[in-house]
Length: 238
Image (tube, rainbow, N blue to C red):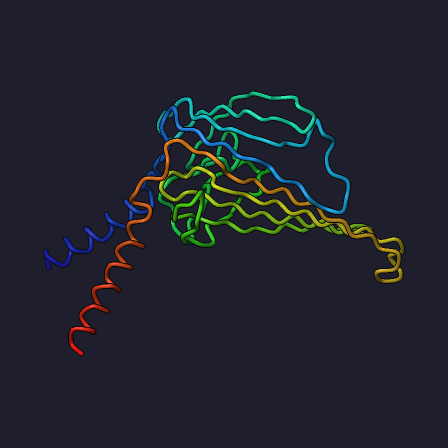
C-alpha cells in the first residue's frame, strides 16, 4: 500500500513539474541575425518610409525569461530606425513580437502563454516541428501557420501568417505575411463589381551569429548512417 501511495505521489509530482516547468531562453547577449524583406502584390504597397527592406536583431541582455534586443530597420526610402524591445519568451508579455520565442518548443505547444490581448499570438500553437534547408544547412525549425479573417457588409479582409523559428534558439528564421482584401461594389448582387487585392511580405534570413551548431543536423546524420549500415549488411548477406 505504501509503495502504491508513493507511486501516485511521484506521478503527481511529475505532472506538476511538467505543468509549471519554466521555458528556456535559447539566445545569448551578442547573438544577432540579419534579414531582407521582399514585397509583392497587385495592390498599393506601403509608402517607402513605412516599407522595410532590411532588418537586424541584436540580443543585448538576457534576464530570466526576458530578452532585451535591439532592432535596426532600413526602409525603402533609405531612412533607418533603431529601437529596443523586451520580450518574455514564456508569456509574450511586453512585446509579443515573434522575433524570439522559447527554445525547444514542440508541435502543439503554445507559443506564448499570456501574450497581449491585441496580439494574434493569443492561443496560437506550434503547428509543426520539422527540418528545413536554411542558408545551406539543415536546421530543425518550429513552424506556425495562422489565418485571421474579418468581414463587414462591404469588405472581407484575410491575413495569413507563417513563421519559422530555429527550435534550438527560438530565434526567427523566416516569416511570410499575406494580406487578401475583397471589396464588394454591390452587396445585393454577389461578386458584382468586386475588387480583390493582395500583398505579401517575406522576411528572409541571410546572415546569423552564432552559426548553426552541428547538433542541428545530427539526427539526419544518424539516420543516414543507420541506413548505410543496413544496406551494407544486406549486401554482405547476399
